[in-house]
Length: 446
Image 1 (tube, rainbow, N blue to C red):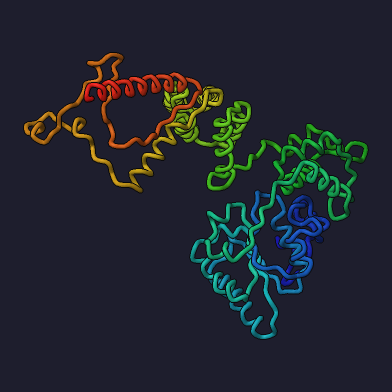
Image 2 (image 1 turned 120 degrees about the horizontal axis):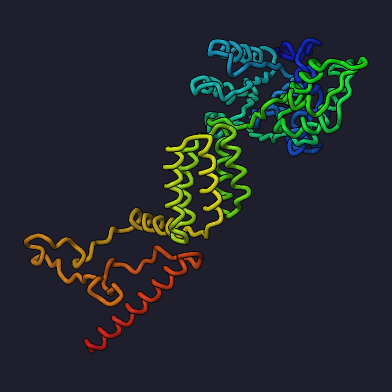
């Protein structure tokens, strides 16, 4: 239910969920987000001076986006409207926008329009907002758990300040739970004793989600039978009330992209401990193991390459094994591949080589194929000058110096890591032979 009526009136009643009753009423009651609303910070100054422009509040569930908007509603002298991105349709939106336009035209009163879960608005709905935002008829505050640069039209994001809220710390959650146990609007009227261990456990496992922590506390308080007239909440009770940990991981949201990014960067950075942790988070949250396996194949070629050629073989084998075995045993296969690749020597020389070569092809003149390398297995090839090819296996070391490309460009530069050290030495030997051959050819010519 809404915690305020038209333009800041109304409040949560005693039958509201604990999370609703504990909504902050002032900036001082907001927990966490010090990087945004600590004294002197830009957003706080704008709120306190009632000089807000359009803004997008972006962050995970339960971090305080809606709470912050409702505090703004209580503090602003402007008209405040709240709609849900899930429930509001185009006709509702047009009515609010037109009324805001007339209100400003009539008496100069500005309107703040808060749209919760704005990412649920489609492109056409978002487009409706744009002219009203541009002309100053509304101040838009959007709240979203989705990255606004992916899910909100760029004309709106370019006209709004974007503030990213972080998951609440365990300390912030613990402080909020203690307040809820004491305050009259919370559980203060009830005879409750809560073990410190239980409170800290709840603060830890709620994943920075204040709403989830308060909901679990309320369940524990209202379902635990009293003993000697008091409710005693232990850690075991909080474990039951929180049930399975709900990992913040939406496949269409930042939880997905950020976690796979952390996973790949941990493997690339040779940290098997972190890599296995992010792997576990993805699997626990229900990520498709085939998606993980495909990313490992790309990583094996891009970040390990010829420093350990077995890495790509292992990654491909892991994908095939994951397909064949399935979950839950596939987790073991992915763990083996992850730890091997994390501990393997690293090189992105192959990746850099193809990027450089593609850039030359795209930006420069395409080089002609040297005549000795051109096809010669047809009549007339000799008449075209397609002769002079030297078959490498006919020469010592299966190497012969000849022109393979009419350019001295160097694309592949192997590192000194892993097997690429051997490759580097081999290339150096071939280069030396080539220099000697050219020297001998020059001497004969002289």
